[in-house]
Length: 407
Ligand SMILES: Cc1cc2nc3c(=O)[nH]c(=O)nc-3n(C[C@H](O)[C@H](O)[C@H](O)COP(=O)(O)OP(=O)(O)OC[C@H]3O[C@@H](n4cnc5c(N)ncnc54)[C@H](O)[C@@H]3O)c2cc1C
Image (cartoon, rainbow, N blue to C red; front, side, top):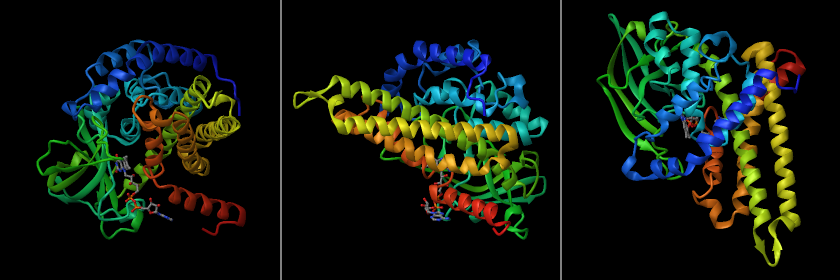
């Protein structure tokens, strides 16, 4: 694995850091004040569109899109994207400015890879242009959705339509004012083998029969404007052409989507941990308690040193996973993708927790991004598959690898 960034990536890093300094960090407080004001619930921050325009003009757009879709973006490999996603991850709203935010990135990859030309024209083109946003609609309240074979929502053929019935929750972005398309996973072929029953269909949010039941809060926050909610689908009619790839192909599509989505979250978690470490060090060096700087205390040295070691370990593992995805595909890298999904959010939760402690009361407030980063990494240990599911998959993979094909 080559640790040297190419000239192209070094240039992109320099441009991205300059953009962050000019437009993102100076706007962080303004963004937070706007979105946390209940008067602005489910409204987008007014400066978002002008910043997106500036990012597009700076050539910092759709950086996540892999090389085979290069005509829409600089065409970066996963290994090349990693340092850029890490930089964007340092500020929670930054990825959206560069059209690199979840779940749009995964949804765009699905449409680019599996969508029909008509589906691509209608939804992929405006997503790539940053004109609309999207939701990925999988998790259901009544079943353990970490095992997706449990999903019960039905997508059944009726003449030239599909009819959808069921409930979903924890759907990020479903209320965002620019959300124009849901990718909904449900059962179509009830008698097929378990992994060939589900399909994914494109549904417009204003289709009759869809109700937003309630908002699901995260540690007391609605995460406006891209927060999560519970949805009810009652006899929702969608034209046949909206089905992606074919009936019973849902697992195939979901697998293709999740590898890159998971590693992107990990890259951003590393950016958050790195920023939390830097904030922790500066705070410790500027705060005096009991006549000594906090940075003179041995326990603080240990917190700083441990955090540095853990970030470096996770970063190297992420780069290795990204490199394997580029060389051997998502399937060939699934052990490393599972490993980094287990390691990175847990590491970032631990590092942000230490940084939070060093900041005292300020640490739990919104005066720094640390509290937000801490809660984000806590829920990332559940979202996109809980830790235990990745541990189970990785354990089985290694048993099969070291003992022959037993799993
Ligand atoms: C902030 C946030 C945003 C989200 N956004 C979306 C979204 O946009 N779209 C979407 O569809 N979903 C979304 N989700 C849902 C998320 O993907 C699910 O919560 C997750 O997959 C777990 O499913 P579940 O909640 O049904 O938990 P369950 O499946 O009920 O699992 C509960 C717990 O059981 C344990 N467990 C499960 N399997 C095992 C095992 N094999 N061994 C041991 N223990 C196990 C784990 O500790 C797990 O946390 C989001 C969740 C959050 C918190």
